[in-house]
Image 1 (cartoon, rainbow, N blue to C red):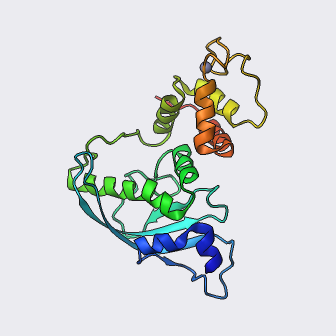
Image 2: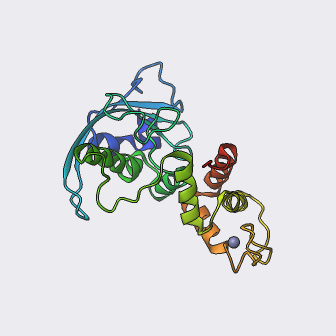
Image 3: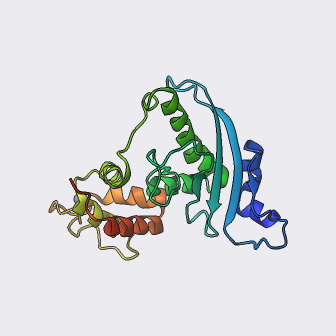
Amino acid sequence: MAEAATKYGLTGLQEMFPGLVCKPDPDDKHFVVGDDLRLVGPVVFTSGGAEERPMLECDYAIKVIVPRAFPTQLPRVYSTDGQILKDYHTNPTGDLCLGPPLQLHAILREEPSLIGYFVGAVVPYLYRHRYTVLHGGEDPPGWTDLAHGAPGLLDYYEAELDVRGYRACLALLRHAGQKQRTGRRAPCPCGSGRSLNACHYKRMAALRQSAGRAAVWRAYLDLLEQGPPRG
Ligand SMILES: [Zn+2]
């Protein structure tokens, strides 16, 4: 237990959500330290109160799979009480779509613990869901909404990188995610014809800084695999 608690920052999370228990119990002799950690149970909290957002009572039953490579890899969160339907923001794998992976990696770089992930991503997601249920599908005031799935992800990259289009996003993510990069005087991969230094150098450096190079590289591979959004 001690190893898992230290590795994932479990203690703080369970103080916040006492209902969340480890399955299997790390004290169980079958539990392998370093294996994926499963947390199951209710999360009950009150959130809101800032930026014209009402305080709301939230009560959800969830399952969290924390990969052994946490915080380098992202935890996946599932709704287990049927409150969050598939056609809400969920991934094709059935887990909750908590946001663009690079944003989630940036949250974990800031605070590499489960509590950081919950406060930064899981609680806001559940609050938003609760709000939409109570307000006929409306998002909370001032919520930055992304279209669902692939188009939403591209919107996110376009905003983060300040560029338009699938090909330019792909080229910039590839460049930013590479271990070996060309010098600042080379042409910018976005295709503007300007030098990197005069174009996307700072944007890409900021993305690498916030999410980590390896996460940017995975985002590039994901976007490549996904292909350009249709329509
Ligand atoms: Zn550029």
